[in-house]
Image (cartoon, rainbow over all chains, first blue to last red; front, side):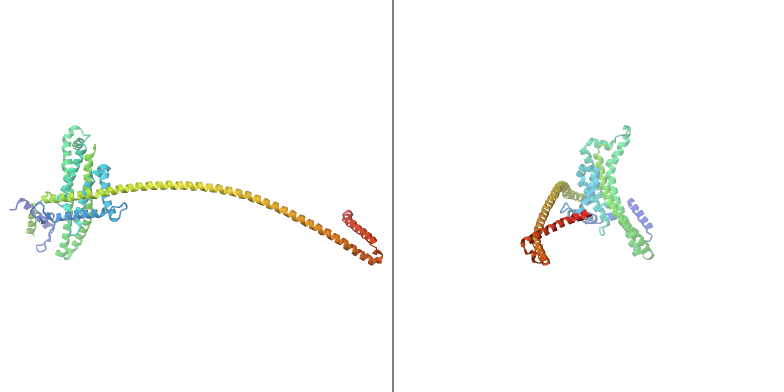
Length: 280
Length: 190
């Protein structure tokens, strides 16, 4: 009767029903679903420029970056004030710990704008996941992770081809020190790992971290709401537990937000470094 | 309940979270480009200028500190030199003073000795003169006293001046002889 994809959703609904047996029709418990990440369109429906809530949240993130760094670097002084110190500390983190640490002074300076952009864009769009009233990460829809992964992909291929096309391809596909018959196996593996899996893992690592983080938070807080106000009585005790978990996971999400931004920028730098390396 | 979940799920059933929507890509790219432009053209150049200025300032300060140190070193050396110079001069002055003191002391002593000798001489001379005067007056007085006494004892027979003078002279000569003999007699008697 149902189409094949609909059978899956039916199964999902049954599963949810089993997890939450207390749900009733009048005060039903709605678990989080993938629909969370596709809210209704607010502006320009039907065009390629649709804007929904999450796109707006991304705009807020971008605005926050622009305003904060404009304020922090508005009047640069040799002896920095409070705001300038914070901005410098943030920029130096990327400059020293990611760019110069992995790529050295010269190449680090070349790729610093890219790495800085990736780090702060991911960080700002991750952190919206725990900011009240925004409550969803701008990176939890595939657009941002994918665009940044493609940028990283282009960047490391550009870096390698620009510096030494032959050495870059040889290092990437025919790692030195391997007996030549093994290249029959090694080369396809190296090709897939370097040119296919890198952007895919960059995208999915960030996307899935933020998707799962959001779903967990929604689950904990909607369960808390359900236990306190719908189920009530004895079940309010469960609500205390789910609220505590929600709080702990909110803190955890802050860590994840920073960590994923760091990992994304760091891996981009590592890929560029590998592309620039003379020998592996 | 089941129906509502299915309805909700069915609405997004076509939405696979791994398949990007075109608007998603467009806006994500725009966000990326805006941030990239901002960091590349605005923030990082400013930061670079600042870092260069700061390192220049630090180098300048280090140079300034080096100059100040050299200056301090020179001042210290000059001070030390002046101090030893002053010490040598002080020693010279002290020696001179000692010498002067010695000279002055000797001079003073000589002067005092001369004074003392002079005063002593004066006193001696005065005493001698007074003694002479006393002797002269004594001689005259003792003579007249003795004559008075003798006149009183032996009457007026000695009124004759020539005899009287002869008697007195003899008496005095005896007296002097006795006077000079007595200490000898005493020491001789012993």
